[in-house]
Amino acid sequence: MSGTAAGPAERVADGRRPRPKLRPERLRELSLLAVIGVSVLVFSQLVDNYLSGSFFNRVTTSMAITAVLAAAQTIVILTRNIDLSVGSIVGVTAYVTGEYLAAHQTTAPVLAVGLAMLMGCVLGLLNGTLVAYGRVPSIIVTLGTLAIYRTWLIDHANSRTITADSLPQWLVEFPQRTVVSLGGLDIRLVLTVAVVVIVALQLALGRLRWGRWVYAVGSNPDAARQEGLPTERITLGAFAMCGALSGLAGFMFLSRFGTITVAAGQGLELASVAAAVVGGVSILGGSGTLIGALLGALLIDLLELSLVRVPEISVFWRDAVLGALILLAIAGDVAIGKRLRRFWTSPARHSTKPPEREATTDA
Image (cartoon, rainbow, N blue to C red; front, side, top):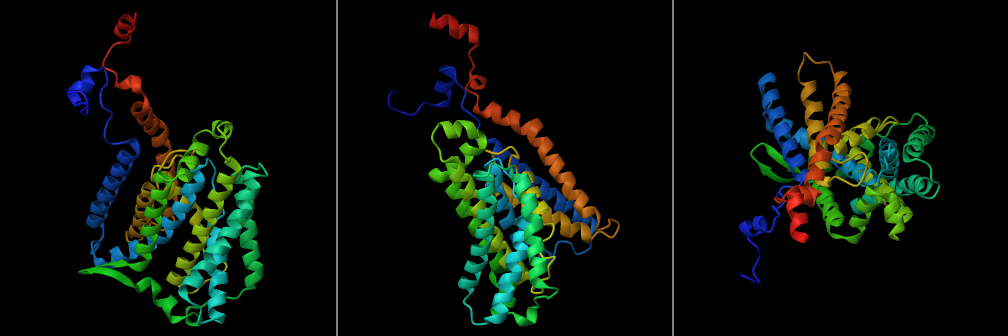
């Protein structure tokens, strides 16, 4: 049998049990899918006409923005940092892009998207420079820039509002554009863009050297530095990418709502963090997937929009639900996730031979 792959019986005879096929991250994503399914069943019993095409379209359109922001937040969290300024970046990019398009109606869509992402990238670079090279904790830096970016927007807007009737028609129609229709269910273009971005980034994290470096820096920054990895440059790049994706989310926010005030994007930083950690991204860095963040965004928007339709529950409880989800996700990651990952990665736990017997054999 030499030269052939070892079968299960051979692996057991060798003293090693094959590792579980499902990694802890996949188990987390499957459990999240189960929670989403249970939530749909519960709300369908509480709300009349809950399982309708219009509600599906509303949830998926809303989650597209949250999902892009969750992906942006995930890349930063993987490097053991956090970006609390993403909501303000969304507000700034949405307002300035809307202002530009109102004055230049013939601007090409690609150019408008590029403008929003470029602005977001510049703001993210400022965050990343202070964190990576200034050695200032990311929570302090981004808490400060959250206020600075918002204050600049308030001063720049000077009480002016961007209205939908001043924007190009293609932008106003963008959220309603459909790629595929199945009965009353529409797969909107905005959702397709979000899914394509997340899948592409997930492949980059899993297949490219850059992705391995991001996980390595988040897992153990000191060890990554000793191995010669450019930790500062990786951290700076993560914040720049987070800013660019926040700019894309700002463009999507502008197209969805049309009317943009200085309050645009407020609170989205909480939703992005919640979606990431609920999706299984470790707040301690180095662990998590963008697919999990996508599912986390779906669960959060589903709960937010569903709770509004239950008259017995005040809308003010939505933030409380988000806070509870964050606490449950972090507690679950600490109590269960670490044990699952330790079990999966420890070869000794897969050995069927007692340690004493192995020592006797070696002697």
